[in-house]
Amino acid sequence: MNLHNSDSHSLDAATSAASTRERSDRLPENKRSAFSPTRSVATSASGEAAPKDRAPRVTLVGAGPGDPDLITRKGLKALQTADVVLYDALSSDELLEETPAHCLRVFVGKRAGCHYKKQEEINEMLVAAALEYGHAVRLKGGDPFIFGRGQEEKAYAEAAGIPVTVVPGISSCISLPELQGVAPTSRGYADSFWVLTAHTRSGGLSEDLLLAPKSNATVIILMGLGRLDQICALWDAEGKGSLPAMVIQNGSRPNERAWVGTVNDIAERVTTEKDKGPGIIVLGETVSQHPDFKVNALAAASHAR
View 1 (cartoon, rainbow, N blue to C red):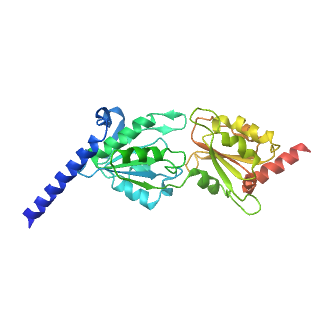
View 2: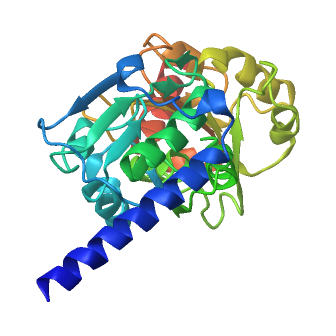
View 3: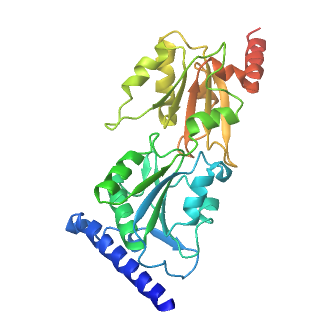
């Protein structure tokens, strides 16, 4: 019986290895060794080697907005079975501690305006990591498919013949306003909400940002702190200078900061340097639900007397 099991395992290993070679052959020759821990910041919890002959697979995991407790159970299970993790600058160290002792952790450092690795390099590393180690987890802040370029990583891995599982994450665009007590939609305030990025591929403002001020929707803008003045000017040009506005930086983290005001004064209220962490901008009547908005409004009225 033991001999039969041993033969079975050997056959499985050989089949897995052959399958791995077949997938590797689908990659251009110069891409097959793209994954090299020496090219990145790589650590493991111990000196243990990863189990060999595991079938390559990729899991894209959304880590949530920052608080490690806000990852999903499925995302946590993926980390706990990972052989290698490629993680971003926005990923929590506490989540990395959930990986097995043998798991290799590779920092790829993507964050708005600060890229340790180019996206094309990350795509190649992800495929090579799966081929070499087995279960490769790509840990991304927020949700992989909301301005996270997760679809590109999924398509690249699948083109190499590697199966991909997507584990959605709680996006900052809805969770961070909620944690401040502000609902993106609320009866009597807003019937819808828009989620926009401030940047296009060319580096200019999104064309949708030119349309958004004309709407009564709550508008939530990611990666826009560096252009806060420019963005507020668009709303002011539509006669919405008194519209409630909020900025949240490092949301759901211990160093979280939030500012509440109006389109006209929110830029002056934001006292932090724009590059001290990720942030979102929320523009809309729903921001008036924040307790600080009423305090600020009363203070402004008193000062005007």
